[in-house]
Amino acid sequence: MELKELYQEIILDHGKNPRNLRKTENFNKDAKGHNPLCGDKVHIYLKLDENKKVQDISFEGQGCAISMASASIMTDLVKGKEEYEVKEIVKDFLEMIKEKDQLNNKILEENEKTKLMCLSGVKKYPMRVKCATLSWHTLTSAIDNTQEEINSEKID
Amino acid sequence: MNIENIKKQFPIFNNKVHNNDLVYLDSANSSQKPQVVVDRIYDFYTKEFSNVGRSVHYLAVAATNLYEETRSLVQKYINAKDPNEIVFTKGATEAINLVANTFGEKFLKEGDEIILTELEHHSNYVPWHYLRRSKGVQIKFAEINSEGEISLESIEKLITSKTKMIAITHLSNVTGAILPIKEITQLAHSKNIPVLIDGCQGAPHLKLDMQEIGCDFYAISCHKMYGPTGLGILYAKKKWLEALPPYQGGGGMISEVKKDGITFGDLPNKYEAGTMATAQVIAFAESIKFLNQIGIKNIEKHESELTKYGEEVLRKNNSVKLVGSPKNKGSVLSFTLDGIHAHDIATILDEDGVAIRAGHHCCQILHDKLGLSATARASLGVYNTKDDIDKLNESINKCKKIFDR
Image: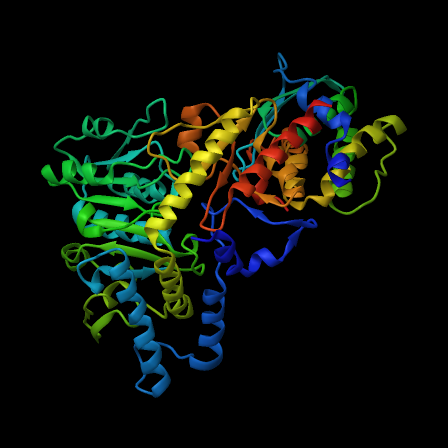
């Protein structure tokens, strides 16, 4: 049943008890994201060390189970990664959600990829894809320091 | 009144959604269309099409007569004094923009005040916000009470000598509160303030009598009234339509055009520039006839019983919290479920063929006030039954099952 694919246990777990739902102290990069259609909001805080490695990442916001779980899993997976690696993971995830069947990056472990693939159920629900991708686009904006609020309606 | 027979007139219900019968509970967003309306659009395009009000050939004359026939039908349906008080627009949004724009241009200056309510849909706030920006007018919001209602007093206490317009909804698309629009209009008129009613949710469900209500402007959305999309109606008292400047410029709305000046046409053409949504206007006559055939009093009774039943069923369900509990309530049931976001509810319900809306329903001011980022909303139409409410309730219970596992 498709609903079970969308609302897998891991999604419900992260949706109900999001990891890293807080504000990083002494963050050095951040960005906000907003879905004007449904009102979902996210604020990502990033602390990179001198070697551009993610020392800490956190988020604040509110939204549906999919958007909260997506932000939660994302923050868990990119912690400790180098900035360029984070960018590659984001790109890979967004491509997977849009068209590919699998994740191709060589940075994440297999079990980490399996965890992330739990979000792929959203592909059957076109109206919900933006719920899953908002925090990822916002992370990109934080890394690039664009200082621009991500608006899910302005991203394809 | 046999709902099964009424439902049979709506071809959409012959279709399955995810292999389930469609339980359509999103009529506050847009209603479904009866076969007569669909057929009328087809027939007009296949047998009778022409532009209206321009040419003198057979088809043009016939189309013009049909177009004006709808205007008369609408006039009678809402008991306006004069058919020229009915202006066709592309939607209720354009109707409100028309008033805000022309009234603002002619009558408003910096420091003037407009009273809205916290219940307003964005379409009855954003057009006035433009005037805040361009003219420096102030906008005041009458506050809701704990039931999600607007009282006469909440408006009265905002009125000052600078109040130039009161623009309020007839029926809240979130709490379902029906506003005392007649009393508010009387109060406003005692202080020489005109009143605009956003009738998007009122018109499809309640008996309308413009002369009894006495309001200056009333905006209607035809696609929420079992009619076609792309069409709205502005009712405005003749004195306003004569006093206000034209809204858009173009063909059909002029009297004389010279290189050094233009004079504008008479009502209602003055406000209907360019080729209008001709087929939609003509098909909307069938929506009015459909409503007349059932009788608005019967519709009111059926929907009010159904709303009460819905409130009862959802109140009994411990996980559901209804949003607002107005005494005088229209057919809207907004709710939240503990620990489950409205969008997740809507996705799970959809799997069962239950169509609801989730989000802020274009009412961010109200959701901020209620401290909710989103709500789920089931809204009723003439084709809904108690069975639909029971199915809604079953699917809500399924949400709990999925999320509690």
